[in-house]
Amino acid sequence: MSSDFFESNSYFIDEKVNLFKFENVYQLYDDKGQHIGAIKQKLTTGQKLLRLLLNKGMLPFMLEIVNLDGKVQATVSRGWTFWMSKIVITDANGVPVGSIAQKFKLFKPTFKISDNAGVVVGQITGDWKAWNFKISDAKENQIGAISKKWAGAMKEIFTTADKYNVVINDDYADKKNKLAILAGAITIDMVLKEAK
Image (cartoon, rainbow, N blue to C red; front, side, top):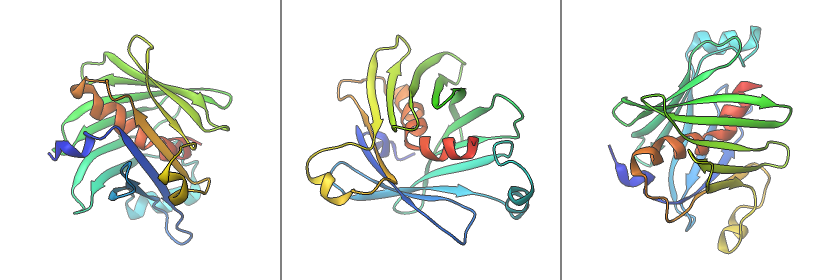
């Protein structure tokens, strides 16, 4: 596993809208604006057909976080769901490292992130409409944020509404849980879209 992929504390995510394809693709950049990888949605032919017939909020999905060489760094996936869905996060070797449980209150979703033993290690809460999320640790201390607001040179590069920034505090030292928290945060837009 290329562990240095998740060493950064700031990621910029840029959605590439594909009108003629079912799969969503998002490009990933570091805090200097360097392209470092992508988030790709993987769908089988059967899943593409089912998306035309069924509510996609019930259907399974798989998101792959890949580096520039196309090597998988982490996956975020969900099986069939009819009510509350559980999303599994795996590392580059396919080993489960955590899970995400989603809950919705109007436009204020909450994502509880647990480690592989089921212990809550973090959560993402916020306002989907305003696109302002807080990333907290298990004790509800803020350790990061997801937003469409940022300053400096990045403002020149990312100006449209389909881009967002994920930031983890520099002093957050829990490497073991960082992958699960970051994978959940980086894929938040796609997870929300799949849940609708």
